[in-house]
Amino acid sequence: MVADLRGLIDPAQCKRLVVKIGSSLLVQDGEPARGWIDGLAHDLRDLREAGIEIVLVSSGAIALGAARLGLPGGGRASLADAQAAASVGQVALAQLWASALDRHGLVASQILVTIGDLEDRRRYLNASATLERLLETGAVPVVNENDSVATEEIRFGDNDRLAARVAQAASAKGVLLLSDVAGLYDRDPSEEGAQLIEKVEGVTPEVIAMASEGSSSGLGSGGMLAKLQAARIAERAGVVLGIVDGRHEGPIARLRGTGKGTIFMPVRADNARKAWLGGRLAPEGVLTVDAGCVEALDKGASLLAAGLIEVEGKFQRGALVSLHGPRGERLGQGLVEYSAEECRAILGLRENEQEARLGYAPRAAVVHRDHMVQG
Ligand code: GLU
Image (cartoon, rainbow, N blue to C red; front, side, top):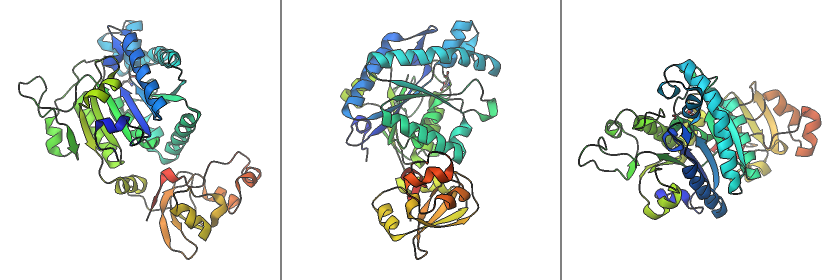
């Protein structure tokens, strides 16, 4: 369990971390802040060498694109401007990260997502599987919202909440928001006597009342309220979230020294995960497994087709299903990787026997461990 901000960058406490970078850190006067980016890439290499897998959530597409196209208001004067700016700026952003990470021996990948990709359970599984595979290969996924196609009502709009959702999809322990503020203050940080809040256990209405509206730079769309919303998503998903000052070269190395910022602790991880996995949904089917599979699940394995003995119900990939043992005892629930029909087709089969039935290479599991809660 991550105990404090330094815990987020300690491989013994946090094996997988999402690092989110705001536009104001990345872009200065319409130009990429190359020195800063290089310093961060250096930090990320150090984290990777220490054994922490990293997902980057990078803003900056709109700000970079607006400068290239000469659009007013940092490209945020209208939705159409933001979409055009993001389309141009995303190319530059991807190049920036690819070359900065490459200089430090890391391989960048790009993932652009919309809300639907992370909220719809079937697409969530797809995004999650892609992130998992990329991290296994050693690449550093660089994620941004697909601003060019997302319309107003279906946009995250800020990358803070996006980062919290990505952490959930990537099964990361923590999210670090590198910001142009040092953390959450008990009142507007420009007011005299404002105190930094070091630890928040539960984003209550009192905590929300501390946040002042708007972002200090005007470049991004974050602001403290968006960060608190992100903290809310994270706390319910069992993810630790930190806000730290990013306005220094090598901000993560600096955090190792100062430990300064605000940490938001999750509510109990199990319940949180269960709540999200279940939501208000009723399970759409039942998967019954054999005794060997029950034992494997107890040891933390995923549910494999080989252990499956019965499939009840009609459901699609991404549905919530109940998991039962051979005597009908309830084991838990999870998001299923196949439709009911496909589950029946591969029931009892080992991995090398599944492709012929499915007509495509099988997925890693029927219900992956990361998308399952027991009990
Ligand atoms: N996705 C936006 C961009 O790349 C940034 C959103 C935000 O400011 O948080 O420009």
